Amino acid sequence: MRGLVLAGTSSGVGKTVAALAAIRALDREGVSVQPAKAGPDFIDPSHHERVAGRPSRTLDRWLQGADGLRRNYHRGEGDVCVVEGDMGLYDGDASSTATVAEALDLPVVLVVDASAGMESVAATAVGFREYATHAGRDIDVTGVIAQRAHGGRHADGIRGALPDDLTYFGRIGPSDDLEIPDRHLGLHMGAESPLDEDALDAAAEHLRVDRLREVAREPPRPDEPDGVRDPGRDPSGPRVAVARDDAFCFAYPATLERIRERGELVPFAPADGEPLPDCDGVYLPGGYPERFAADLAAGPALDSLADRAADGLPVLGECGGLMALAESLTTTDGETHELAGVLPADVAMRDRYQALDHVELRARTDALTASAGGTLRGHEFHYSTADTARDARFAFDVERGDGIADGRDGLTEYRTLGTYCHCHPESGAIDAFLDAL
Image 1 (tube, rainbow, N blue to C red):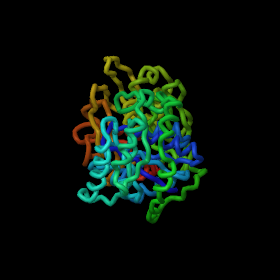
Image 2 (cartoon, one colour):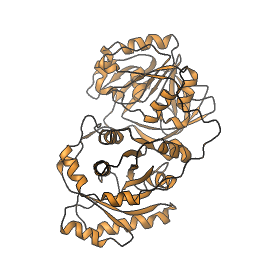
Image 3 (cartoon, rainbow, N blue to C red):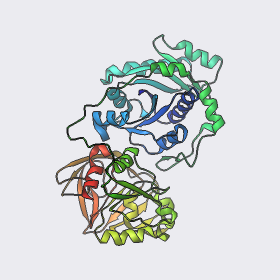
Image 4 (spheres, one colour):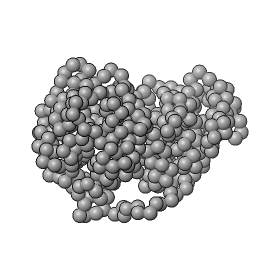
């Protein structure tokens, strides 16, 4: 599968809209598109999936390593992969869009805000291309998509200013209908605030699909390590209950695929009042439990989960999952809701984010997701804090990032583990959890 990277000059330049317009433009020409996202984001991929009709792949050098990143790319399906970048092209010390493009040897199409420039758009593109040498990145900036650019003289001025070796891939006109609402943690999810279909069609109309197809190329294959598991489904594997609703919507597609490959994934919707199904283990991914705290508190699932956890059922909660497993959750409006009460912590929402970083954890003892002394790489981004009991036990020391408290993460009780850290399955965390079942 050939691919290309749509990278921004900065955050907020319109990468998501450009990616969605490119997906739509390619699709209208009969090209099957696999969307992907550089970085650990869950929200932009939800918009990709809505437009492309298939889950968006997560591509992050820190979470996956170069070979893991390539493995995840090649598990995608389609004729062309459109990779939306993260922040600006070179931004990010652990993993940047540039490191992803370099690991995959994919061409970079630069998304530039052209609302107040013509020749300056070309100057920006030339500067971003030349900076690769200064930054020590082996990447190929091939041209630009002019975001928020008018047609006629404006578009002609941008095209004419570009040097011959930088391609004009088209423009996206300014439109209020192309604005996606946001809140804490980022944009609204794709199912909540889809772009207007007519506006998206109009945005796609002025992209040069032929040039996008021509520039896309095939990345290298990964060097498969020894001991890679058979990807075929294991009919004797564990039955895993996975929370899948608007309160628990942050799960990497690769994580769900891994669970299905090694066992049976049983979705349930605790925020919608569904009970906990019969299972061998529970996975609560991240999301927005604070938005549905009253529903979670009133439903049957968390009470059942508390009883089963006390009996030794293995439970893994990541970020929002950790919050749901706590004794209580207090919203920014001051409302307090009693939740599962499995983990000895009271969680409170704050008005600004409390942590945002790539994370590395070292296991203090054997845990659900790692053996003693082992390390996990992940990502944290949350607006809550957790006030833990004095005798709380933690599974991990934080070597990079913030964790839950005092340089620790992985609050543990019975066979339940809750972390602020989200792990990709390439870290080994999900396989360790499944092994424990």
